[in-house]
View 1 (cartoon, rainbow, N blue to C red):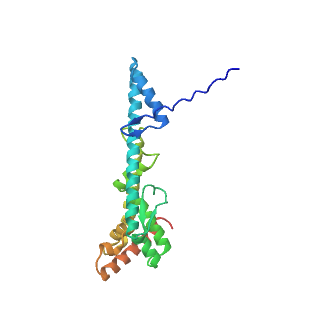
View 2: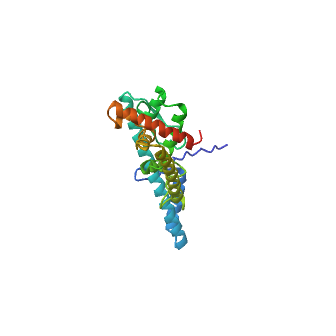
View 3: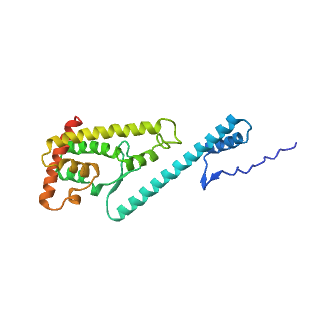
Amino acid sequence: MSRRKATLRAPAARISINGQALTLGQEQLWRAANSDLGSADFARRRHGSMALRRIEGELAEGQAAEAVRRGLKETVALERARGETVEALSRPGGRGRVRVRSRDGLETLERSGAITALQYRAGLLYRDLYEATDPERDLRSQMASPALAGAGAKGPPGRAEAWAERRLRLAASMAALEAKVRTHDRNGRAVRALREVAGDARCISHFVKGGGGQAAYRRALVLALEVCVGHFGL
């Protein structure tokens, strides 16, 4: 009785473009696109061209996301080498960001008892608004978010517009909140204190010199945070 010998096939070589290996799904799309481009049918050729642009966009997104990951890894290593306490943000929208806890002015004030837990929470809610309206952080969030990566010329229609509208809406909310703060502020310090400490996570000593000036800005910050507490209904 004859036996059939199993034939072992070598795995097919993976496709790489500009040094980036394609996923299995991208490889299938790549082969189909090249087949369409070789067709005499104009509609198929156009479809193939669109598929290649899609692959190009996905590869660009992957490069951008990897650059963000490398940058964060280097930042964390550097700050920890300096003795700082660093953690990844876990709040919604915190992907792709880290926080140096030992230099976070808002958290430092809450730990020392200079502001209440409620004021601290209000400050974090303001920070969410502040960071969402920052164009640079906005770009990093798009690159890090699978739902929003690729928004633009190569992304699905309307996605970039929806993201821009969201940022404008949040900017309007932040402006309305800061306007409330200004109505309670006689010395013009409260909004700056709110932006520097709650928004940028800086310590008051980083932007104000002298004990008297720092005390004045702490009072201004407490005032601003109290307005935030009322604004957010805490």
